[in-house]
Length: 320
Ligand SMILES: Nc1ncnc2c1ncn2[C@@H]1O[C@H](COP(=O)(O)OP(=O)(O)OP(=O)(O)O)[C@@H](O)[C@H]1O
Ligand SMILES: [Mg+2]
Image 1 (spheres, protein in one colour):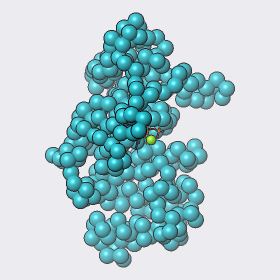
Image 2 (cartoon, rainbow, N blue to C red):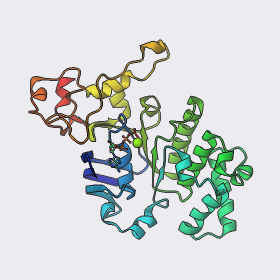
Image 3 (cartoon, rainbow, N blue to C red):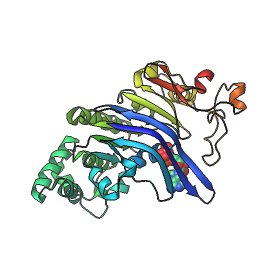
Image 4 (tube, rainbow, N blue to C red):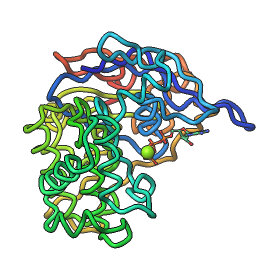
């Protein structure tokens, strides 16, 4: 469905070049869901933005993002516009950044259907109401006639999800779609994604900080650190047997029911400087057990297939 090969994204800034995504390769199949986790600044959002040509102007991007025999990186704006919403859609972290505060929900939803699917306004309204019902909005008629600020955070997020599935896209990218919501609504939204996947056969890329919501939601898991993939494989395999010390650390940060809140673990150290990353293994400053070679910068980060379809960084797997 989507095949990303050797993707590099960097940003020119007055302070230097920010190396946000460094040699990332992965693919996602039809009807498969992939979670991308990693701490703040690890490159998750920029990776998602690059797929739909949404990177800032100061970005340089090289590599391949192959979708339906095209490298999306070579497409023009009008060509990309045909793919956005209709084939690949994106849900942003904060719905208020993508919902127009001055426009009623009806107009915002209908415009997508009119522009991409050539529907009449009447047809579009009917379909918009159907979709709001599908995303479990309790009163679709009232909601469609509301402005975004009249809705609760959870409802706005459902509207955003509805918007993203209006054209039944093949791929839905959701960038932290539940971060600002309370835990009950979070789990309802994640259930909704699974229903959408079943009903529309869509592939889903879910970006999150939260390992807790990944386990029951996503088929595959990709762990990023410093713009690189550290571990990639089936979610249940990684939860049962993580091969990377960073993944292990992330799993330990998931609160358990029988644990005292005070005992929540963190991963020691600070994120790396993306302008001047460490030489050799980028994880060595956070690694609980770095070897002599990591510290001397003699090792580099490359993925190896340690078990079938379970990939891990060749350097870090030795420090696990
Ligand atoms: N326009 C830009 N110019 C310079 N640096 C940028 C630009 N956009 C993003 N970056 C940098 O790229 C790196 C990766 O950012 P990205 O937004 O992908 O992080 P993230 O993993 O999504 O983090 P979070 O979990 O906080 O959303 C960060 O160091 C960020 O500061
Ligand atoms: Mg982000």
